[in-house]
Length: 507
Image (cartoon, rainbow, N blue to C red; front, top):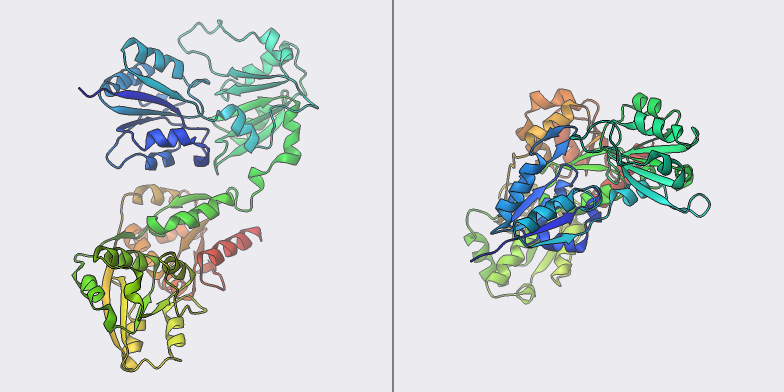
């Protein structure tokens, strides 16, 4: 009989990069993932496509499932499945992991604890606050700011008379609503009213927000700032280090929300660069890449590669699918030995080089018109060209080559479709004015964006959003829909686009 197992996994405080290697390993073989409000949903992409995903988040009294219900769910799913219980921070540091593990023991279900990076240490670090510092403190305390709701309100497990003066640094979890009481109890029990305090909301994420003050004024400052849970509270002289050590919130794009419309397969590097610079990136792929309805035209072209003088690749996807079919035919890069290769830009050239193929032509500008200009120096009359590309694309390149007397075979290597799953979420972001920058990396991303969201519905909500286009062709398409491009690089690459976004917002 199949026997299950439950992994209680600490997902860290929010930054996807802070998930442990062991946490990723168990996620990759999960059959069921049960995740919390504080566990970044980015981690779900590590789980197999067929894994069941169950959200049991709890925030501010709004419980998708009670703790008893979560316990029962763990037992039910854990009997015959590999279950990953994904919890924010560390499961054994105010994460109720101990309670859930006890229930599993009582029901004879095997389990494993995968510790996570606790918010207690990571969140202050991202706010520039070291919990320990030889000049300020020799002790640290972690305290819940939200005790059990089923107790008498006068009963507490916190020894305020000892805590207030015994610990140099105090970190309170889940204490925003009880902040007035926390400050009052610390002052009444001997902590000076001018003790520095920091509240850090959504720490380690691009939405991190920090409010500082003292025990005497922090309540008013938090109220004025409108800071809401979830937030961590740090009390102690170490908070003053933030003035010098605040590295995370000083990154050039911190606090900016950028929508990326590239296909998911191509967005990862672009997204990673922007996130490293502090941006909150919303992936809204307006293009989904999939195989064409039939491989036959491409397979036939591959069988007759020796008949071609040139192969022109206009995208990384074209290279990827072409090489997949080449290998499927039992061939490799040697089959292209007599064929000259052209790549539309450095990324496409890099994709060829990864396959041990060096392109003969890469234009100085990364667009079809630049390939045409470069080809003008070649004698193309009577030459045969192969162009593996998307099923639907601009015809300017093949039309010009044919005009010059070349024979051009356009073969579909992939097709693009419209993914609709994130339309409501992204529409709401634009309506709420939350998007600082909308990026387009091709004319098709512009066209598909308006096909998905509807021009008349979305255009009025884009007036405060800065439009970033990778090049003039894309910008012209954006203009045809009523958008003015504010950001465009001089070199039409992702690297250039990132640099232009930084420069724009720095100004």
